[in-house]
Length: 377
Ligand code: PLP
Image (cartoon, protein in one colour):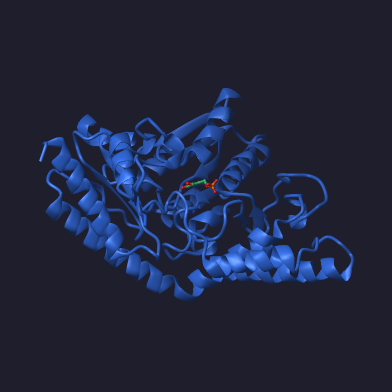
C-alpha cells in the first residue's frame, strides 16, 4: 500500500470517470464528425460533455476548447500572443515561477528577438501587482501569470493583475495557467477577467491526455491546428471522446463536492503541517500554500532526491519539486532565495480528496526513520 502524496504530479482517475471513458470507447465509439446515426449520437454526447465542463469551469460551452494537456494550452496561449500581437510589439510579462510549459515557449520567442520580463516572487511565493504595473510597456502584448503555483501552492493575485493590465491597455492579452487551481480554488474565468485560461484533466481525477483551453468569447485568434475544423475550427483533430467523457465526469464530481473536497484537504494539510513540525526535528516549512492541496517542506542537510527515493522505498510518494525538473533544484524554489541547505532538501507534498491521515502518518514515520538511520539509531 502506497501513501500517495504526489497529486500535483498526477491523480488517480475517479472510478466513475474511468467507467465513462470505457463506455465511450466500447459502446459509443462513433466519430462526432460522421454523418451516420452513430456519429450524430457521439456528437450529441460531446455537446453534453462540453456543456458539463463549461458549467464546472463557470463559462459558456463555446468558450471551451478541448486540448491534449496543460502543456498544449500554455503553448497555445503563447503562440496566440505571437500571432495576435506581433504587429503591436514583442514584449511579454510572466513570473519567474511559471511551469516549464510557459517558460520554455517563452525562451523560444526570446531566441526570435522578443523580450520577456519575469516577475520575481516574494519569500512566500507571491508576485506583486505593483511589480507587474511597473513592467508593462507600450509594446507589451501578453501577460501570463499562473493562478496556483504547482510547487508552493501559492495563489497569485490574478484578478487584480488582469484588471490592472486591462486598465493599462485592453489590447494586452491576459493568460492564466489554472492547471493546479481548477477544483482546488473557486474561480470563474470571467470573474478573474482573463482572456485565456488553461486546465489539465489529469490533475482532477480525469485521465492523462485531455485538457481545456478557455478562450474568452469574442476573442479572435488563429487556429492552433488546421484540418477537419473540429473545436469550432480552432483545433482540428478527431475529438478524444473517451477522455472528454471522463473529464466531464470528473468535472461533475468536483462541481457537486468541490467545497467538501477543499475543506477536507485544507484540514488534512493543516494537520500535516502541525504534526510534521512537532515530530520531525529540524524540518522547515518552505511554503504552507494558499491552495488546500500543496505545501513544501525542507529537511536541511538531507538532499531532496535522496529523501524522495528513501521515502519511496518506504511506500511514500512525494516529489522534490515539479515532476518536470528531475535531478536539479527547481527554478521555483530557487526563485524564493532560500538558503542553499534549505533549497537542497526541499520536498513537495500534494493531496487529493482521497488523501488520508494514514498517508500523512506514513510520511512522518518515513522522515523520522530516515533521520534515525542517519544518526545510526
Ligand atoms: N502547468 C502547471 C502549473 C502544472 O502543474 C502542469 C503539470 O504539472 C502543467 C502546466 C502541464 O500540464 P500537463 O501535464 O497536462 O501537460
